[in-house]
Length: 210
Image 1 (cartoon, helix red, strand yellow):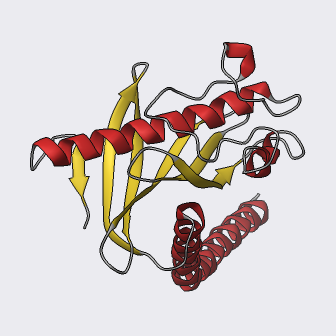
Image 2: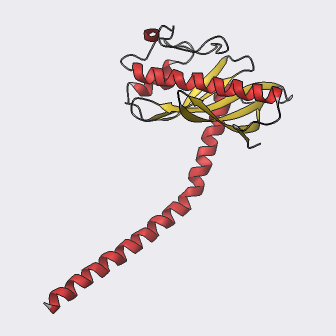
Image 3: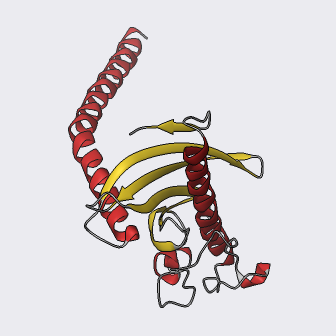
């Protein structure tokens, strides 16, 4: 029996030791990759802002985080305010996240000061490839669901099945609704921030990171 107990003890010690070593290795790998991953994310966002705002020659002059409640649920938006080289207001690129068919759908959408959509890009999507993943092209200028140039100060975007005039992605109405919801809510957050800035110097809902 002593021999069996000794063998079991040794096995436990080996397993515990292996777990500690593997944990240390994983922590080290995470440490050395954290910086490059963060830099890549920042570069992707910077390129996305230029893309959705329609030009290379712009400066992001402020980054605001705003929390708004829609249908009883809180959503967080990040608003990147842009100016041209002459410091003229170009509008803002807004990060907006909502729940799609499979998981969260995160969109970056650009608005001019009048509320027109300048462009958009998908920052995160877990939708079914070939269906929901088509959102990155489907609603672009010249495509079947084209929303570029639409003014959201007038009304929300809705798919035709909901009485709107936007063509849903073929066989993916749920994702289309989620995408348009993210765009609509992004505009409301942007418009709200403009209104707050125009009437007061502070808001409990707004956190300035500039």
